[in-house]
Length: 439
Image 1 (tube, rainbow, N blue to C red):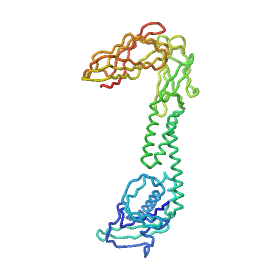
Image 2: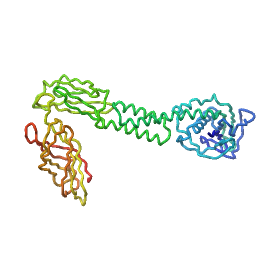
Image 3: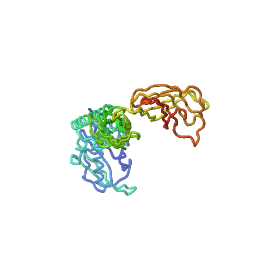
Image 4: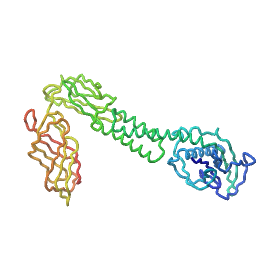
């Protein structure tokens, strides 16, 4: 391994914006010794030699030690991403000095992030030489300050091994967080992962890994928007409430709050990763809409589910309740001169009661279309509980008129359903947001 001994000669570098140009006429006012040491402005095997200039000795000492730190970083963490400044360096390769101007990379690393840099101190300096000089042209006075700092090859190898071990540990931690994002078991793990990523962001100094950390943190934050509440009746006066992440069950240490417009004796307790809600319906009237409302506040996210209590047949018995919800998606095969060719509609129904029901017809008034979309004689039967996606196509040509200020911002209409309990035909009105590929 080549050992780097960097000597920043005053006549050949611009450091901290204060170095004197070549040929500058100066007068020495004071000096720390009668004769400059032999190591000044040379590359000394097993040492770092740095020279700086500053307005005071205290400032010069700090600048010199900072420069030593930067050079140690350069030799230990060679792929560190840093800003650039033009400096002069001498590299000792097998006893041969190769002097060259280069873009030396000034580190972004804070010493707190790399423990091996904490051992760098003034106490280890083995040689100091300084001069107080005056520029004859400007009469400006300043100090030139040089130090000899031991940095043998054995120390370099030791620090490099420590850095590589730390870097491998941090990289493995990131990979683990990357793999765990799809395997979370509790919502609190999102916050824990974000905290770990914040620590990695403070450690990683190269742009590639920094960007990877930022991207993964955004993916974790997006999980909060993928949380939802669902549940089902498990018997008379009991409802099992479940928190979902992207449709999959996930635990929460926070207990939801459940209220009702009629039910009493409400209790909520954890139940194998979910929550069991118990209640009494003595004060609930069959002719009214009786509901439970579950609210969960977790990690700054507010979730809510409104639960319709059965109106007959005893608590826990299924009831007929089909509700249009969500966003209607409308797409066309092509558009030519405000003429749409074939319209494909996707609409969501929520079969809250879970009873099989029939869909007879559907009517949609879409803003901008000159005629409503009417679907008669559908005569479809749906048996599943929960979310049902309806997909249908309106064949033919449809005219799209220019938008008006009076246009309603939502699709209005109704679905005609068959109530399986009574056989009656019921018309359920809808007013939903929509999205198209032609507006």
